[in-house]
Image 1: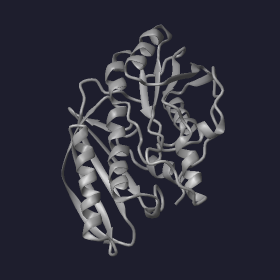
Image 2: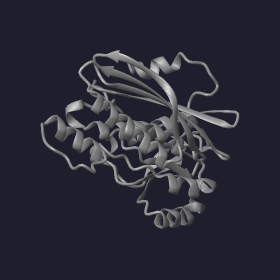
Image 3: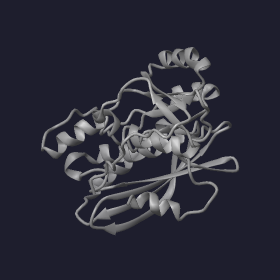
Length: 273
């Protein structure tokens, strides 16, 4: 049983189901970034931990065509963390939020055995991009190249070093592309649980199926925490979507078309906790 999905099924709010909750003119999102589940401290510097914790949270806002404004940060601080490490962590988070016009305005701190972070982002959008909205015939595409996060995670487990600019350390958010492409998109979401699982989520939510246009290998499909974008659009918009992708330096792969069937990818959790 997928206990994460089971827990979510026990929540009945009408706002649940997207990358973030749209309530009035505000958009709210929250993600955890926990030691032992999302990272190991021996793999990353405090600067890298702080930056990725913020980026994976900002990804939800970007995925909904929202502009992040404020952040609330909760940190579980292990007793062995030094004040220098705390300074590096917080400076990295402040610097990263500022890059996206966002400000940390509060949160909470507790003592704990591990370094855990939980972050809430408050955003605004005049035209949110939802996961719902698929239409039969729509093209499904993803941005960037997928698989690096999984490959480098496996390398870290083997005790190997990975590049400092690895996608595992430094997710690349596609804010400019989404903000410009939004008028031409039917729906979208960020790829946090892997292309296979996240495509299935979108199809399930819209009661649609798909036919594959370009084969996806398992290393690509199962690679979690990529934080690239999964998008859907009418084929008549293909040329303009591709032109926006080119103008923003965004690699784009069209891999499937929406049809009325029950086809799904295999799906498995990518967490290692």
